[in-house]
Image (tube, rainbow, N blue to C red; front, side, top):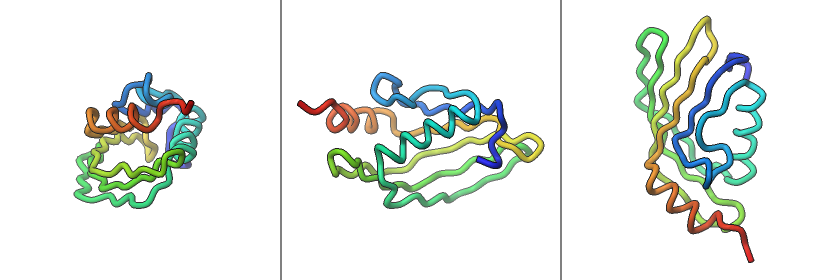
Length: 115
């Protein structure tokens, strides 16, 4: 969080109806809370960044991931893309792109409230 600007915007392009921290989150403290929620919901088994491209104040990269959904024990894996905008050494915007249909289908199957 040391490199996140106080007024940073984090956009996770997943429905906020399926994931409370989906959509846009503004501000370092709110981003910290959203990322903490992710770690509560999922255990990171693999998180491997690759194809990092720097172009001025923009950093683009892909991530191979494998997460274990803590409540169900089911695995969610794939690749995602990140686009980060940096100003004065701090991240001012982070856009995270998943295979939205796949992730949202997973959330519908395994994130529903348990009876």
